[in-house]
Image (tube, rainbow, N blue to C red; front, side):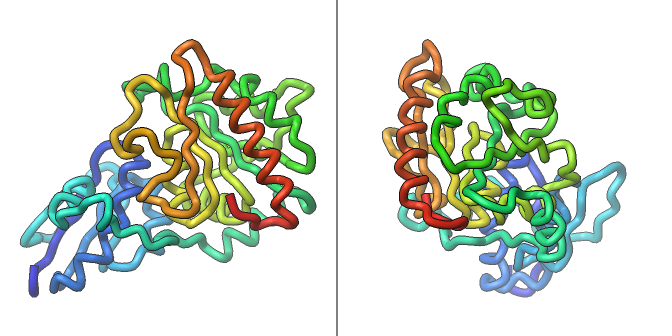
Length: 276
């Protein structure tokens, strides 16, 4: 790559791009003279904060690109760097929230108590969505038994309407509809004390920002990146905790385990910013 140009072209889901953009800063030390990152439009404002790219382009409509010497896909970079679980570039955070947007979102958050962001559904187009997404917000009801927590909905699209009309015993602040792109979401997540979500892009956003994040993983077709029989992730060390579905019959036991963990976490959290 010495003295050469390279184009990084988007593939697969939004979460995949967020997880593997961490490799971008590794290209310049190999001598790359020009690095161009192309991404899906909602990610472009966020990725402008990522070091290592000379240009970030949101792939929307027809795009004309300059000629490059090489091109690669984000998920090919771990292969090219001979990545093993021990050599994952796992220094956190590798993403940053825009400070101006953070001020805008700070005014919308509860002024006191611990704030926990929730995402209970992913895109219905995902091949394993029937297993990874929760049936609905109501299944998380046990979490509301933990005192001193204000829940915030980060839900976009599928399930967004549930947050606007939650069950009476599950009050939640519906901020999802106001999120314009992932730079907005990053500015919001960066100010939450904890994110609880299913296996979707928000997990990678929170992890990349170095924010505490608990992820609910399905028992059927668990994604490869979460490995097996672990409650942590080498991709997001120190900030991510995995709650694996106990039974294919439902999420009850897993939610009970998470509720107990949340009670312990809340007891150890004296002020916003407490660790997972």
